[in-house]
Image 1 (cartoon, one colour):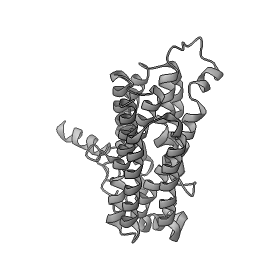
Image 2 (image 1 turned 90 degrees about the vertical axis):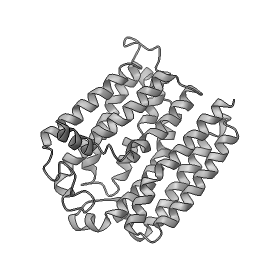
Image 3 (image 1 turned 45 degrees about the horizontal axis):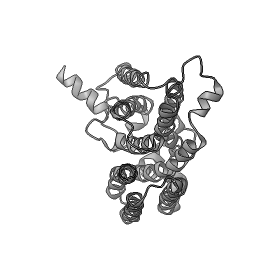
Image 4 (image 1 turned 45 degrees about the vertical axis):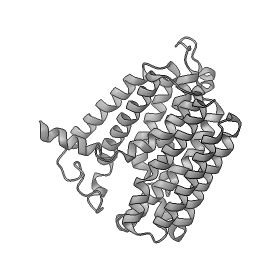
Amino acid sequence: MRERLALYLDLIRWNRPAGWLLLLWPSLSALWVASEGWPGWHLLGVFVLGTVLMRSAGCCINDVADREFDRHVKRTANRPVTRGAVSVREALGVGAVLALLAFGLVLTTSVAAVLWSFAALAVTLLYPYAKRHVSMPQAVLGVAFSFGIPMAFAVVHGQGLSWRDLDGAALWGAVPGFAWALLGVNLFWVLAYDTEYAMVDRDDDLRIGMKTSAITLGAWDVHAVMVFYALHLAGLALLLRDQDLGWPWGLALMLAVAQAAWHHRLIKNRAREACFLAFRLNHWLGATLFVGIAASYALR
């Protein structure tokens, strides 16, 4: 039993929290903005636990979908499904249980969030297969990794709605255009860090015919990553300019710009380990922005 549990923890990347932190920080930032400050312990717990559960479920789905490709990639060849230590049925079963637990958390929020969660699940299921057909599958991942943003607004703005009140207009009204704009801006951050991630596996992906942004961008990969960072940070500054966030937000933006500049130093020579380090440390950029937002609301 202990050995099986260890395999399942390896399957969901339990010892590599960077993945779920990359989902968590923009979701929490959106939750604070939607709530105009502290959202309460219940919603905080729902988003933290829900993020961990859904990222873990996503790992199960991704490893099943990519099992034939992963065995040809140095970094992924030893994953539990790829090496046969966990069967496809087992991995899908674990993923289903985790997704159902996350859905149970959503049921404690609002009916609007419950309905939007199906869209979030659909994008999560779509991403692993986008790598076969889309020249920049990181864009699909960006939507999946950013869907916590509209979910945050659906939870906060959808409170008070009942199933009888909920029609198409009310469902879309729970997620304003501002939330979708935040999702679009966050997409650039995902493009930045997941292109860094794709740069690690470029030689393997070229050999097996996988499509990634690092391959599509070619010699422009480093320049594109920095443009993505710039669009993300400039877009956030523009969207949040009317929120009266104060000096903590301004300081957070400056620190985030400094981190992006440091990432350029890490990836400019395209060294495998340096690119992987840049990817793994990206969650600090998201954490910096979240702290700036949360502190600004706290000091109002």
